[in-house]
Image 1 (cartoon, helix red, strand yellow):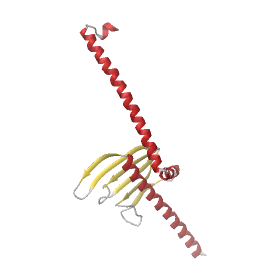
Image 2 (cartoon, helix red, strand yellow):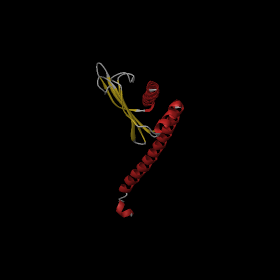
Image 3 (cartoon, helix red, strand yellow):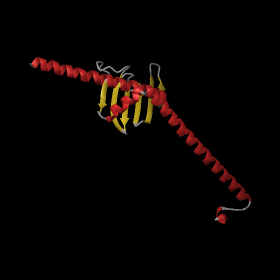
Image 4 (cartoon, one colour):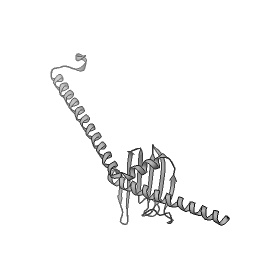
Length: 175
């Protein structure tokens, strides 16, 4: 009976390991894709033998993503994921993540609702990214319109102040 229980425990552990490896692969692949499509490169350094690059993306459906390439040990990567501003995942790896590789380590994995939400986003990633870009574009258009209106207002105000100065009017005489 001990042998059967031991085999059952090993299979359960094997299933858990396989599921976690699959999830980690999905997370890293998704983060790499989203950050290359939508993220902002905040650091880039070219060396003769490698490139050092930092990418980040904030508030992507509640997730903040950070990817540092060329940062871990010898030319490795660090992928960090936050959900609702709290860190939920971090992995260090060289090349492609592989739990059998001594250079690949999950440093943080907090189970929670973020996993389900992220899987839903991953399944529809192209549409989700298109929707996010459309909202971002609309927000930038709105900000540009607001900036244009502000510029018009301040330009008009500056012109009025110039004309007022020519007429010997100052702010005290107007109020």
